[in-house]
Image: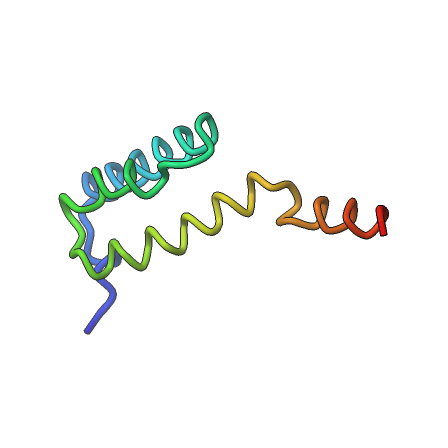
Length: 82
């Protein structure tokens, strides 16, 4: 098993980045649906097993980025109230 991303052509890499940007944009606007939008693009040129791992990983990154400072802001405000 090798790294499939390393074997992507330039066109597929552009499509990967475009689908990732579109999914992040939609998740930023709506607050959800990163996986649905990302899977729509990624499953055309990546195997399902690899797409699943990437969707889970990028989904966590996008949601952590939306919470501000990877969640430290909400933790700090919770500590001040105590």
